[in-house]
Length: 456
Image (tube, rainbow, N blue to C red; front, top):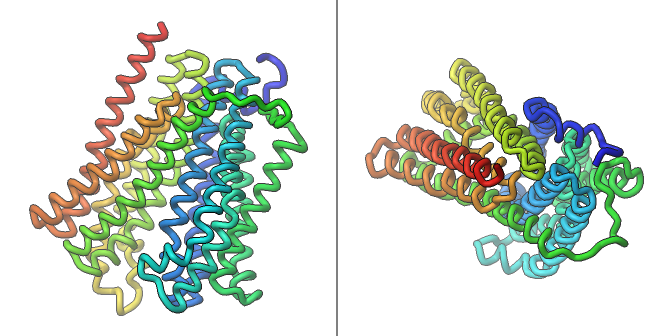
């Protein structure tokens, strides 16, 4: 594998520290733009009233299932491609990309066929009725019908990330988010499509970015990966590799949504609806602090995957530890900023007379919850390393331990059982993350040590 190496592949096979920085940077920018889109999208839809917001809220869990599968298969394919590149097996890297695309296409078709006809029954069963029911069905038909496009977009991005081309993956993500921000008011208000317009704006922006990535991968063909369907030969081993990482990644995404539902229940018991208002407001800002880590995580999966494929455990170890150090420093800086700016951040959500009474509780929430951020790199980037080496079940276990087990357990313990109310819930979330991250990091170190012994 000495010919036609793209800059991305050269980065993957080079210094792991530089690779983590170079691959993470573009993805951090892309994630920040995507976070901005999520905020702006909510603002545009809010102008339609409470029924439109309720419709989108009802569809969100179903959308998360589709999105989780798309993201998971994309990660599974990206991980497999990186390992084959590290092993200097271009033919198998190409085959991994083709298999991932075909798996995604099949899943997309199945999702549309089995969900689209039953949208009314699904939302009626969870209590939707009247105008809200009609809105959520119309909204859902657009996105469920376009499941193949949504999944292809994530897989194509995963192929680019797998070969270290995070710059073009960034361009696609930024283009998609930017288009969505631009198209939302046009489809919603100018075309008078209402909440359905928001769905069409989302699908249209994803379609355009998919066409761009199709041009890169199938027409321009200047990527390292060369996708040729006419050369396709089914390989059950590659399918297992992709799904071993992809399926656990999908479940990991879903576990986060389930945890938020359970935490909301605990918070209502501990502090009523005001508690939910405080948590929702604080969590929006705190989650922005995780965005840089999401970018770093993508870099870690690619770098550790290539190192594992090359059987270079020292490079794997260097990339893994460096990424955690890098992420920890960033998160510590965010902690300091949030603590200092807590009153100003609180004012963003409590400037009205109706919300002013939760200001002091919100400041306390900011200054408590923010302390979970420095622990996140130790758990999240360990999960990314596990994904890189193809141990998807371990990545899922670390995420499951952090979200559903530790966060929920400690929040319930301190908030409800020990009756520390909302303050107990906040510190329960922090302690749950710290405990799970510590266990995950120890497991990561042990795994690398075991790999070194096995391959030496």
